[in-house]
Length: 112
Length: 113
Image (cartoon, rainbow over all chains, first blue to last red; front, side, top):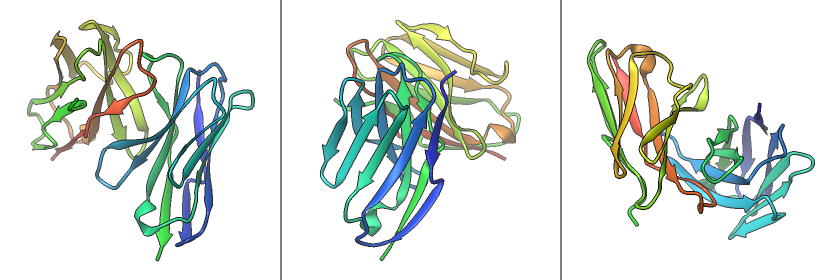
């Protein structure tokens, strides 16, 4: 049974700092991994998708890496801003039409 | 494409009332999933459909929950009777075999008082 964990559960950093969010999954037989952002009371916004054959994906100040063999992914946020404050969720799935297994999320607070 | 559309955005109802949540998947997608998000359990799958047919409903918590997909462009999740512990955010998403990732609807925040 696939299980996804995220460390840390919560993180508070001063504005401008670079930070790393961690995601671990127990079954390496994944199709893809997707990072989402969720603002309080809002929906899920997809940030980055990493296909199982890829090692990393970048979008602006965000960089996500994937190491399938070790069951790990990291989300790197450069030069953090108060607007980055949100909960970040890691999600894995075995096929393009399989149920998504979510991690519990990391709650990020960037202090001005 | 308008993405996955859910309605209503917010629903407040009294215990014992029937609640119906709606979802319109992305056009051309033949898989549809319903998820529930709570503080205690996070995001968990309730049920999913393929070509309008329910494939896995093992996540549906009780018989009070039911879901239908009468056609490729519409699905409902019904709770009857509703209870305060059903209060949560319900998300819908869709996909196809050619998809790489998932786009979620904006969710329905349900409050049962």
